[in-house]
Image 1 (cartoon, helix red, strand yellow):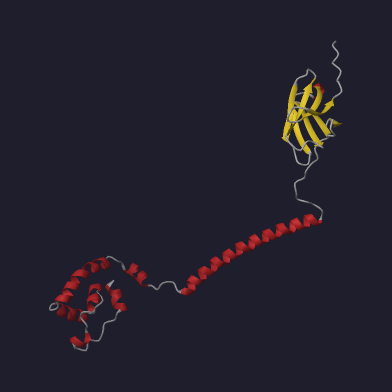
Image 2 (cartoon, rainbow, N blue to C red):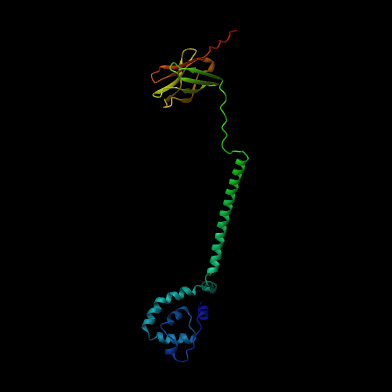
Length: 243
């Protein structure tokens, strides 16, 4: 370590005049670091014997010399090497900017390809919207006119669990609650659905009952007071023949 410091700070020409050639107070640091030449070291020690201030400062900085003595020459040379210059740092920053630009360009290309695919699909008459398939035709359809002009259309679908009803009505009451009821062949009644009246007097509704289609006797549209506004009588089904 001392040799490196002597290389970094060459010995000065003392010219035989100690007072002019050596500033002993300044040379205190060089002495601690081992950077003085033999002539400078001799002059400093002569000064130190008669200078209380330098002796006190030397006592404070003496531990530094011990720590520096534990640093090997290779580590010391590494510490003395210059830091990376600005052009080198600039090159690293430019590399990061280039990578970011490539990612942005890749995302832009992907989005553009998607837009072109959508445009081509539209031009070819291929629409990417979900396909809405029409509901299957009901097993039975009926229309009935109520006592006060209500127009009612019913579509009935037989299910394993009962019957699905599709109701469509117009000219209905515009206030209160309306409901749809199913009467089976035994006279039992099940509610298929209920809804609040609309201002237009029109309603579409899908309901269900746990009654098989061939067991339905009639279907009734009722108002909030349970008054029957319209009723559909289904044709009777013949009873199965007993063997």
